[in-house]
Image (cartoon, rainbow, N blue to C red; front, top):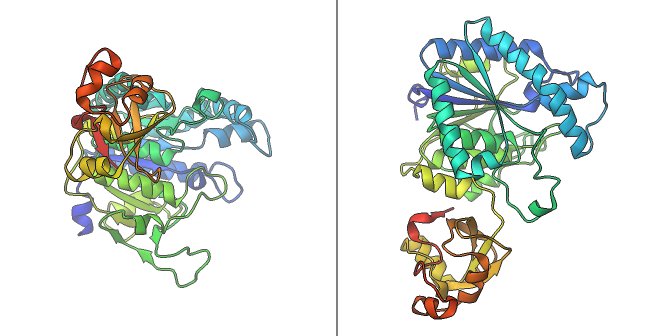
Amino acid sequence: MDRKDFFNVKRIVIKLGTNILRGDDGNVSLPRIFSFIEDISSLVHSGKEVIVITSGAVGLGKKRLNLNSTEGTALKQACAAIGQSKLMSIYEEGFDSYGLVAAQILLTEDDFSIRERYLSLRTTFNKLLELGTVPVINQNDTVSTVEISPRFANMQVAFSDNDKLSALVASELDADLLVILSDVDGLYDKNPKEFSDAQIIREVTEVTDEIYNMGTDASEGGRGGMRTKLEAARLVTRFGGKVLIANGKEPFIIRKIFNYENFGTMFLPQTQGLSDKKRWIGYATNIIGKIMVNSGAKSALIEEEKSLLPIGVIKIINEFNKGDVVSILDENEIEFARGIVNYDSEACSKLTGSHSDNILNILGYKNYDAIITRDNITIL
């Protein structure tokens, strides 16, 4: 795709990673942050809508307390509480100097997983953009309890890093483009730190398993890595958005990419987008419950877009309530879909392997023929 066409967008989400907000000394680099603010302000004044996903609160808190480490969840949460106000003051001061208003939004997993909050958040975001502000978003590390609460031990959380958070925000707001700025130039065909002949890939038409396996884990100081960025790219492109991964340490990188200079890796949008509800089911919710199905049911769900009937269910894993989003696994325990269940885990266990005609006899009541109806299933 021509870069001019790729960047012909209205609504943009820009994610600033931990490692590009720090200088070589490990401290927050104010000149670099202000260069981002300058370029983002130019985009907003040109008529574009920009949402910023930022890291940096924990690092600023660590510096303020003169700590050498943030080992342990409680200490990390304390550093986030101290550093977040400083981080936001930097953005407020910066955008104010360009005549723009910054709006702080701190998010936890439940803000996406609970659909009422998800829809309310969407309304708030749209109003902020309508008012011409620049929403500045960070994960609310201070109050997030997913990492420390025993009841989340078996949970697949909606997001655990700002790469996934940026993708969820882009999805929720129907953003045209997600720009992920990190300390790497883009996606390489092999790890450039290990192979001197590694070549950067400038354009990816689809994030296949082969592409995903080119990713590496997080670098020191960050929670993400190329794999989390590729997961984000897969999500955003699937709903019809575009993604660019580029090196945020390149001076004035935002200005350069929107002047169509050849930086980063472009991920092209897929032709068939998911509805908002399907996106929420598939990617924005916390998952505890799981349903294992046989090969016939898997084929019916994927190839024929059928509902999940009790006869195709093999096993129920963990407890869940009616109306929860659950993970759907094949016989090899590989997740291939998610859906909203019509019965709780106790009822589903009783119905396992049964014909739909027997639901009333088994349970004493019957709400649906299906465990999950096809309109409430998202294939991953």
